[in-house]
Image (cartoon, rainbow, N blue to C red):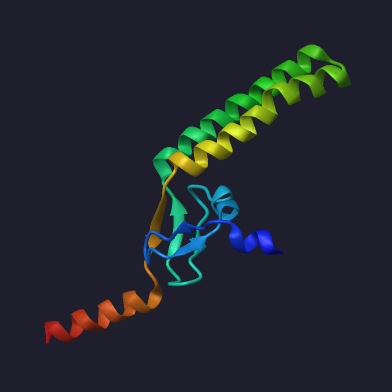
Length: 124
């Protein structure tokens, strides 16, 4: 798969190396984090910006449920879903990519241990 090597990856906010793929970022949320394959820091997305996506998702699901109950036929539900859900998914993907920054949730364990032992040695 040659195209995978050509896709530009996003920079890790801790080590600044391009290690996070666009698709992996799309599945991150305020409660889900991943480890950077380079530095092992826990990476997630900004909580403040993610909550806007969650509110928008609830509004779209509620509107689909409302229109689904009003239309009451399969063709109407498919039409409403296509008109509302498809543009919404595209808009959320674009918003998530450009306006929801990656952030470090926890530094790598080795770095925290080194800091812990370094501070104990200085206290003696």
